[in-house]
Length: 518
Image 1 (cartoon, one colour):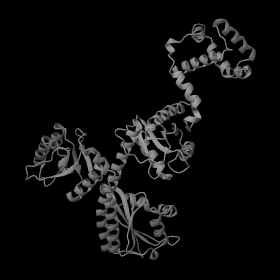
Image 2 (cartoon, helix red, strand yellow):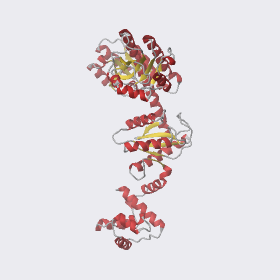
Image 3 (cartoon, rainbow, N blue to C red):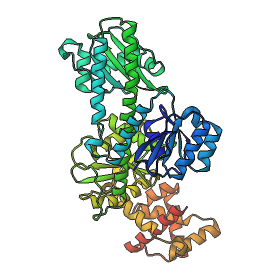
Image 4 (cartoon, helix red, strand yellow):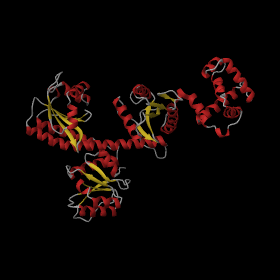
C-alpha cells in the first residue's frame, strides 16, 4: 500500500511538493488524467492529475469533484496549486494537494508514478520491479554514446554505475572505465583523484557539462554531464573522449540528461517503495509471528539473532534507521535486514560465520564504531531457529540493550549468553515491590533515614565481597576495624543470619531493587 504523501516522499522534492496533506491515509492504486472538458473524475484509489487547467476556478471545480468522488489526491502545476482559493478548497475537503514542478511533462509524470505504484502493489514481482528502468538506462547510455561517439557510463550521485554503453569494446577504452564497469562503481583511487580536482563539488553545484582533463594511470579525458531535477543532483553521464566536444553535441547530451533525470527519479522511488515494504514485513515478523498468516521475509540461513541497536543521542528513530543502513551497506551488507519498532532499530543477523550480515561481523563493526562515536551499542537476543522465535529474541535484545545503556551490562556489543547473570538478577529485582519491603533491610533503611547513618551501604559492601573485609572497607573508604564495628551494630539493629546463603541472596536482591528505584 502507498499513499499520496508516500509518493511525494518516494519521488522527492525534485518533482513534487505536498501543499495540503489531507487525510493522508488513502491508498493510491492508479493515476487518473482529468480533462476539464469531461465530467468524469477519479474515484477511491485514484491520484488525479489536473491536465489542461487554465485558471484557479477550473482547479477549484476539479478539487470539489475529486473530493466528492473520494479520490486519494490531486496533482496540479505549482502555479495553480499555490493559488489561495485552491489551497482553501483542499483544506476544506481535507484533500491531499500536490504541486508539480513546471519543467516536467505530464506524460513523464504518468510513466514515473505508475512505475512506483506498480512496485508498491507487488514489491516482489519482477514485472513490477526496476528491471524495466534498468533496461531503459542501458538504452539511454547507448543513445548518449551514439551522440558523442564515445564510451559512456551513467552513475548515481554516489559514484555507483547504473548503466554503460555497449557499442564500444572495453579493450578500446582506458583501464579506469574497465574497473568501473567490472566493479559497478568508480574505483576508490579514481574517486580520490576526481575529488581532489573538485569534480564532485562542481557536479553537486552546477548543471553545466564540463571537460575533465586526462590524469594518472591512463585516465583519459572525460566529458561529464550533471543529471539534475528540480535543483537536486541525481547522478551524471561520463563520456570517455579524446578532447573538447562541440557545443552541439554537448547540448544533445544535456537534453539526454533531462530524460535520464526522470528515470533516476523513478528508480529511486521504486527502491524507496521496496525498502518501505521490506521494513513493514520485517516489523510484522518481529512483532508477532503468525503461522496462520505468514509474512514473506528474505532471511539468511538459520539460526538468526535479533539485535537491538543504539545510536548517539540527537537522532530520531528514522534517522537512526538510515544511519545503520548506510553503515551496513558501506561495510559490505548489501541487503540489510533492518526495521524500527517501538522506538528501537533492530537488525536480524545470521549466527554463523563472520560475513557481512552476521552477528560476529556486526559485533566487530559496532566495536570499531563505538571507539569514534560514543553511544553506539548493540545487544543480541537469543538464537532463533524458526521465524516464530524472532519476537522472543527481539524482547531479549531490548532488555539487554537497556542494561547496556544504563551501564549495568558491559557493552558496546554483547549477546544474552554473555550477560545471563546480569539479566537474571535484573529480572528478579524488577519483579520485587519495594513498597512492600519487609525483613531486616526495611529496618536498616528506616534507621538510616532517622539517624543519618549508612548501614545499608555497609551491608551492601560486605555482601559484595564475601570473606574479604579489607576490600569491603576499601570500597567504603573505612578502616577494617570500623567496618567490623558497623557490622556488629547492624546485627544489633536488625536480626541477620549472614551464614544462610538464601538470606544473603534475598538481601542483595532487595538492595539492588532499592537502588534501581532511586
